[in-house]
Amino acid sequence: MGRIEETAAALQKRGYDVACFQTGEEAAAYLDRKIDGFTVGFGDSETMLTLRLYERLVRHNDVYDPMHPRDGLGFYGTARKCLTTEIFLTSVNGIAETGEMVNIDGTGNRVAGSLYGHRKVYFIVGQNKIEPTLEAAAARARNVAAPKNAARHHYKTPCAVREDHCYDCRSPQRICNAQVIYWRKMNHMDMEVILIHEDLGF
Image (cartoon, rainbow, N blue to C red; front, side, top):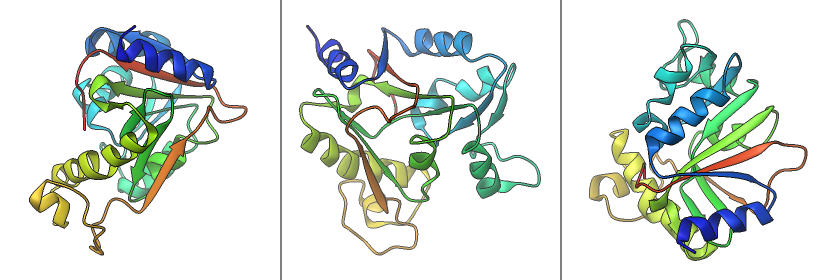
């Protein structure tokens, strides 16, 4: 059994639905079929940008994406709308082979949207996010994903400038203000993890 298959089995034991795909294109096509005629909210994700999920889903859904702010709403107004949609999509910064997932957030809209209030939440995760343990997944989130995400947004945090690891800085542009560990599927929530046999996102 490979890493993705082991991780999928561990996630299922923790209550999640899991779908595995060889390529990002296959995963994107699956989501395009499943999500049709809904209000949809996005959490910021390089993985989702790479898969062009906004361009796919906006054709037949009412999509709110802070990376594509609605006229008159801007980033924060659009992000608030994401919290009340039927469907919410995001990724994670790290996932353990034992089934725990980890996300770090600076504004809070991404982790808030992943926890409560939607008809269904999808987590879309490339194989590069998988680590052997929760501790390693948390370290990855802080020292790999966060610096790369900060650099992607052209922030001037120490981790983004040096692109190496977390400095626990006090920068006003700091993006690691909260860390969420998903021990198990949230109660009364429909949650599905999409695992992809490709390196995607940070």
